[in-house]
Amino acid sequence: MKELKLLMTEEKNTYLQAKFDYYRKFNVWVVLCACISSVGYFVSDCQLFGRFAWETLFPRTFILIPMIFYIIANRATNNYRVLALITQVIMHMIMWCTICSIYYLPDKTHASEGFIIMHLLYMASAFASPLLLVTISHWLILFDILVSNLFNHYANLDIMLSLGIPCLIGITLVNCALSNVFYDNYTIRKKLEASLVIDPLTTTYNRNILNKIVREGKFIFDRSGNISVLMIDIDFFKNVNDKFGHSNGDIVLKSIANTIQSCVRGNDYVLRWGGEEFVVLMPACSKSEAVGVAERIRTKIAGTDNTICPVTVSVGVAGYNGIDYQASIRHADKALYVAKQTGRNKVVSYSKGATTDVLCANGLNYSN
Image (tube, rainbow, N blue to C red; front, side, top):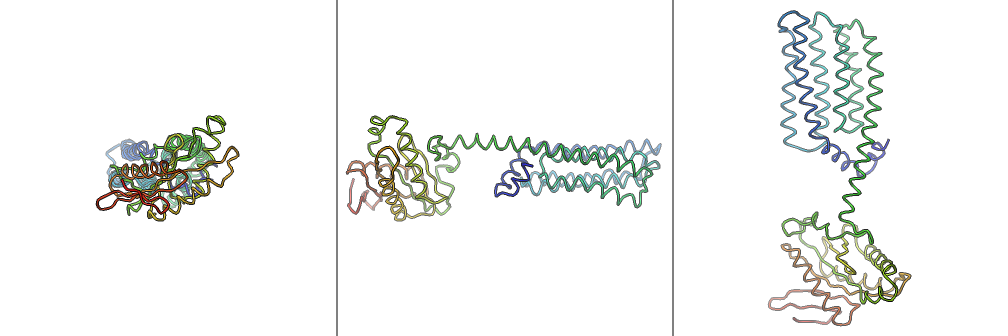
């Protein structure tokens, strides 16, 4: 069972929240229709009594109170744990409102039809809820029936069970099938979403990732604002393509991307900025630490056998001012330009002084 296997992974909460979000509106309609339909059965109560059924008016209409509570909760939160649990609780409350109404009915032989309808309501409520939760909740219908039989004394209890148990089994299998369908939909959607932000050649991020990590011109993945930016460019990469061909140039690009990723932390963002340029965004990293990482990247790439030809890189390093992410990228690009103009295969750090911009490359100062 695909969903149950996924529940054993760290991705389970993301998956279950996505499932709930997808079926959320449907779930709201299921709860509202189930509650209103439950109240509507008061009409059949009156038919059985042959008069206005005062006895069942309260148990039939009581379900409107939890329905209102559900509406308030649905507006207050989007948490699948809370709303899925409330949904299942309301399903059981509808069951017990029905059971309490049956207690007063002069003819209880139609109770089995009502319980079959409850099975269908539980199947509808399974769309948005975790499969394990709704399966346990659904099978508790048997417990509800057996407990209520202690005071309702159903004449056809054996028929209720012989009809209900196959129905339970069948609906459980249907719920498993529905969960598999959504799981397939979820994995396809995840792949599509990933393809929008992942560079297919190097498997690093592309520029589209900025739509997820930038709000109002600011990085949002590190509230401290202590972020460093590396801009990396392959030296003389055009010569590689011209001499060895673009397919071999792609091999070099992939090798360099793998080397960069091996030198940074798991929470750093490596982007293919375009062509032979890469950008690394490093949260919770001072500029001096970033210079050390940049130097490690530069050294490792120079010593890596990419199976095509030796290559080197130039790196520009800049800090993030906490206000404008584009400024930090421009500063890193400015430092990279100095690195390339002063010999390549080096790391240049950008810093802004009180009156002048200073670029430091391998211990030397460069003033604009």
